[in-house]
Length: 119
Image (tube, rainbow, N blue to C red):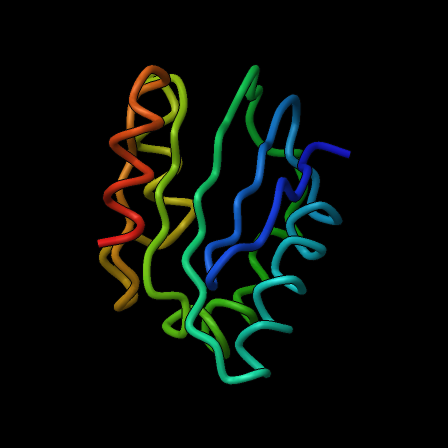
C-alpha cells in the first residue's frame, strides 16, 4: 500500500503517500473523500509525500469519474513533498481544471501547509 490515512479531523483528511502510488490505492483514498462528501461534508486533503516514487504505469489512470463526479466537492488540497514532483502533482490533481484550491509545499513546509489547508 502506497498510502496511509493518518487521520480525519474537522473535514481534513491527512494522508501519507510513499513509494509508487497504485491505482487501487488512489481509488481507496478517493472512497474516503467520497464517503465524507456523501455525508454532506466539504473535505480538505493534506498529503505528505515521503519517499514518493511516482505513479504506477497503467492506462487506467485515464478514468476521471471521481474528478467529474466529486472533484469540485473537495475544498482544498495541500501536497507536501519533494519539489521535483510539483508539476506532475499539479497535472495529476487537475489543478486549474477544477474549483478545488491545490497547492504544493516543499518537504520542510508542513506547518505552512497545515495553516493553508485550514484557512
